Image (spheres, chains in turn yellow, cyan):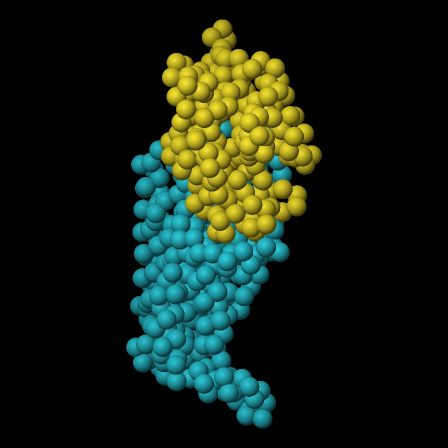
Length: 177
Length: 313
């Protein structure tokens, strides 16, 4: 089992529905977010290209946050989802410093918080909140170890990229380009 | 060419627009930890070599600093935690991959040892025997025969402590300015140099002051070499490292780095120390104070500049 998210940058319209869905589903405090939208404009008129995408924790295979955590609060569970145990987190910020994606933040209550791939929903066979609300269906979630899963098929047939692969983290959020 | 980049729906405190997760307490701790490591290293080496009668400033008076420095440093560390009630979780596990984990353990062992070290000189500090506290005298009597054994333990511990202040930062590959292997030795050298400077300030004889002036000058030369190495390494590095180097060389932190760390904190004290070694009459406290100040500013520059460097956006 290796969970992954695939996001089609050609279908994303940057509506931020995924951001709001996540905040609602996970009770994210006001002013914070576990996912966000980036809009990148490339080129200059008339040859302009706009890329929209939803970003979040990449649930890296070689997760620097897990390596740097002094207490083991940051850990990887079955399926490759990276989680934080609030009762073990001392709020030292080492994981935040170590994340090339700046995907983590300090929850107002002190512990470190981030995207969980909605593992409480995934356990029940549902897809993460962001994926389930996407109005353009540009987000996919599934098991990379299953060659017939939707995500495996997409990565086989489409061009894709990951964010900052040079950081050596082996991210598991893929962007179709 | 990338024209514009917007990140919408995101303005997280301390994360955006750039990281401000580690504040001044971390810089202060890195300085105090290095300073303590330097003093402990020198006093232990002198004790192991059996020269403790000749260099009392180093083994007796300067060793009053590490327990205070480490205690204040630990307080600063805990002060910067956002979930401090769970600090005990550090000591429920040892994670060798996490420098902060083994650093916390080394601090747990070293800090009490530095207190015990000072206690071995208790009756020498409190000359009037009627003013001595009974149980402290008992502890002193118990510990004095073990001073050399403590010194043997403290030599490796102080080196680990000094290197740890640098490795703590260099373990984060997400921050290109920190992510270079030279940072551990560099912070150790800087820590030893600030330790030597403190001993110069507290030295009891001119022989002792001259010895540590020589040691300090050698350490400054070594430190300058390591800084050149660091800049060269980043200069020959990837795009993110080039951008990180720009912050120090021709960027936001250039004045702080070259003006206060390299010139005022290293080159000026080195010249004054050289004059002293050549026999000129110079106030020994001036280079020592400059080195301490330069070491502190160096930690601030590295901690703050490092958090600006990143891979994305």
